[in-house]
Image (cartoon, rainbow, N blue to C red; front, top):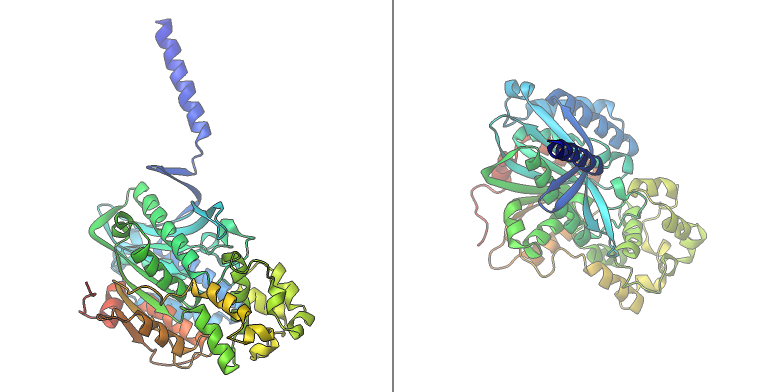
Length: 449
């Protein structure tokens, strides 16, 4: 009898010890471990309000007043024909989970990265699809997805799992320099984030529909990341994991798909467009993502004397926030559009050894090389974009074409600036369901075998 009582007390003590050692915010799915940073349950109305609050902060960082936009945003959301109809949405809980997952840094060290996943909790419901969303240019860590709730999370009401990877240097990896155009690196991290999100969602008891699939999209920096992610899923991911994601198509808007071509075009034309900070951030990012190729060089070796005298080299080696933070800190030092005001003569000489070294590093992240998409890719780009030239998207599309072209190029009805087209893209996402967008852009055309 005493032996049985002792055994019961031992089991109770041991189980309490195990609970104390396994943090309640740690999720184990098979051999995979994820830390939950926060979990919040929202009504649909609350989810919309959270998303608009994040959008307001994002626009404030971009120095764009939100007041006249929030009513438009609400209008587009109210016009959206969500899969989960209005009456049912009122009764539906939308769960928002910020989490970390294991990955590696651009230098190959083991690290944790973070992201956000949102999904509806409906009794007896099978989730139809997953949205892998690559956000706009990393303007600030405060609006990294794990620190906020993106407006695109309302698309969970399309019976959709919405996944938002934090960019390296944001979320739990804050303080690390942003690689910016390290397309291949982000593609791997975003794919890991999507697979982790599927584990977390299924851990929460959500069932996937038998014909479950993923669509993949982003604008600007996110547009380049979206195309790179499709390339990674189709070229690098094991078949079993690729089938689990089951990528249907990608919508890539206003992206940098070839950093090397972006620089070459600016050097040849002598014009860096409306945002020289894109070039400075990209070049700086090489020292994060491809440091081995640039071994022995510093950012100062690539800059002009004028840029160094203005303190640009010091700034590029010390700041650690997003692109628009850099533009603010430049404080007018980026008014010139002439590459010669920023880069040394050897960088401007496309036949020099220094230029070839920089080009080699950039070409590692060229989305048009050594690949033909198996799933459809829709490119969207404004003909009047003076930040990322329209012609660069045409070049990438031509690179990807083979005997069966799985790429489609669309221009907005109203061709405007890079920022204006960003609003068109966002409103389009908030107005149409994924299946409506697919039909609108692709119709009944099947992907090539």
